[in-house]
Image (cartoon, rainbow, N blue to C red; front, top):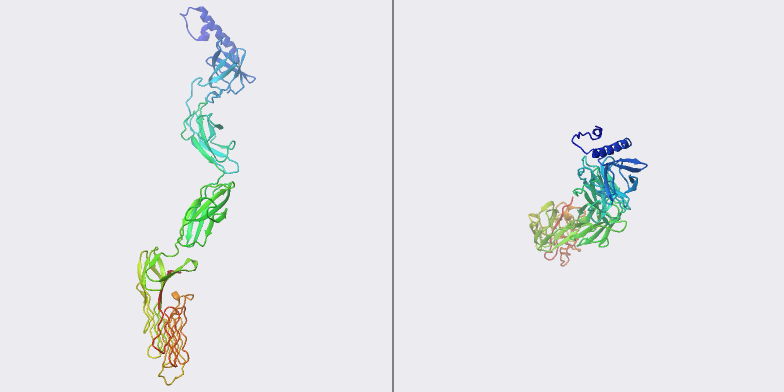
Length: 566
């Protein structure tokens, strides 16, 4: 039976010959056309001719105003394509919904809807068997690029998924896109990066969202890992890696400049008590494109704040990076007696204790040097000896430690008093030994005229010793006192102040001068009759001058500490 050729069916019980004949005729017509057509589908065939599509429906379309034909297309359609059906031209219309636009590719089953009145047709999404949505892209990131014009590099990771055909990247200013048409499409394809430079402005924030799609142009809407934002700014980032290195009255600042073609300069602003709020709020200590500055002449106990501003070519800047420094190169302490705190060169310090008292150390633990001078001895016929001196280097002074300090008094009718720093001490110089012999001490007192000496009625008295030396002799029987044999300079150093001069002896012709030292604090020897008093020894611990009337007082001692020196 001929119809079996076309139907492949055995219809022995089918009695309506006319219906069967109609089916046979339709298949015969289709068979005649078939050699010139491709991609036979479930309801029509299509051929591309001269850039247009010609469709042969399997069944007549009839008088319906709108009809549909399902077929396989030889290529993807584009806007402006024409489809011919039963000698009527229909403009292939790409709808506004991207989910429907390009809803098929070559070889994909698609349903075309035709409108006879409008002479338009369009692809219906979901034609044929829908394919699964692909996995979403991940790790979407955006990085602003430096330059005079704004641009962003967007990167992402595509899924490993057989249903993944590509992705669409949509960018929107101010908020994340909520769909593939909510923003500007900057990329469509299967790459993993794109540079966006069109339509961007500085001082704006841009959000990107990626949408993976399958071969049917169906989009994955999952937002996880598919949204990123970038703030575009011509303002450089802050400096980084800021380090402040203190050195007593100095502070060295170092930093790393931002990598930005928009960087014009870096300014460091110094302000006391609060952080600089802008580049004009304080004292400018640096302006340039370097990465370090050293600030000098900082004062002790002042709260300095340093703000570092990275300033763009447009004059704009972000909040500064601020570092604080309060110099503490002078010690913190209390003392119950008279004292002087002295700032030396190179930010060193000394404390002179001028009277006895108790020291309480309030600074952190410190290494110090200690210098002690005992009181000077009194003078009579010979000069009094200067107070002995002692130097002790690199002593430990702990925080909150209390130290008893005694300052030796000058001798009024005898030896000078001993000076103490804790258990460290220096003895006072002695008074005249016997009649006319100078006293011993740091520096010896000079020998003096003995009133009962018939052999030398007009002898010259001896000078007081200086810097640890002996006093001069008057004669073979009126000797100068013995000095300590080492320097009496402060801390035993050549540049130190000179203390403990021995007193000069008395004589008939005006008296001998005392040993050197500054200031002169001991008493000049008194004169009586033909005898003239000797001069006082110089400096703290100086011995009294030789006297023709009573005793001349020696100078008080002193205790000095300083920060330990190399």
